[in-house]
Length: 317
Image 1 (cartoon, helix red, strand yellow):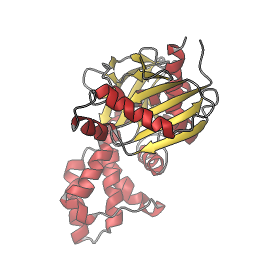
Image 2 (cartoon, rainbow, N blue to C red; image 1 turned 90 degrees about the horizontal axis):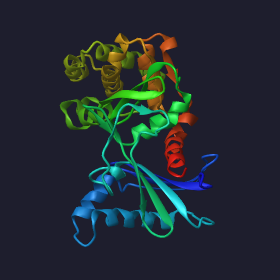
Image 3 (cartoon, helix red, strand yellow; image 1 turned 30 degrees about the vertical axis):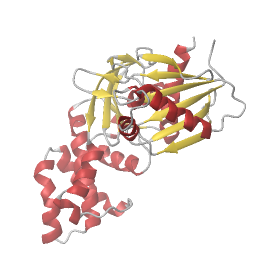
Image 4 (tube, rainbow, N blue to C red; image 1 turned 135 degrees about the vertical axis):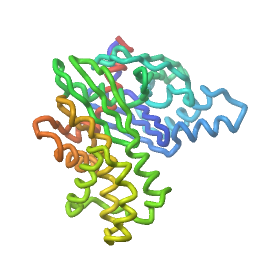
């Protein structure tokens, strides 16, 4: 059969929803829809009614959003869905694929569903180890794998609300660990006594020293003993709330990355925006430069689409 000229990418996370019509060859996004109807919210709405099944409830939302997407000139279309849609609170649960998985993604579990006479939905599973799970990041990793060494080992770092450190060796992803860095930062910054000592502000190089100071404490596993010092420094030394904000950021990022100090692997960093600068600063504060590779933002932006296309290629063979 071969790849269709276009496909629809569905990225349905816990808190957000995104549909994109994509040119299969160039991966150019032709049209796009974003909403705040994440899987969690949609599942809660499904539970509040009794007329429709779980599968049909999610399918109806998908179809409604597809009507908003500019599909002019597209008679039939393939929709590739990764992330939380294949979870227990999604459209239909698929079991996790156990690592190791090949860079090609051929080991992942996928299932084709016919939603109506025009739409074929390809649902993709998540991945797991004996102690951790993920849904969505594995597709991004597969998309980035074209830029990873095929005959070496290393660790791919995907910062976020729940950061993933994915270890690979000889063309396979073999293990990963989740770090709740982003979520912990939000909780500590909004719902603890530290909130009065913090002020969110855009990144400025003048915060570099205090950020790196926090990183060093985190790498040294001193974060638990250092958290309350934010409050104390605010009261005793009049440290500004803006400085405290980046000290806390450094403390948590350092705690996340600290284990890499004891390894010899090359670290491949995949994140854009402010987090790219912060994670680079953190890594460079304790690792030699030759052990750090930072992905081009363009590769990161298209990684999910590349990964989804790889899975679709195998499905339509």
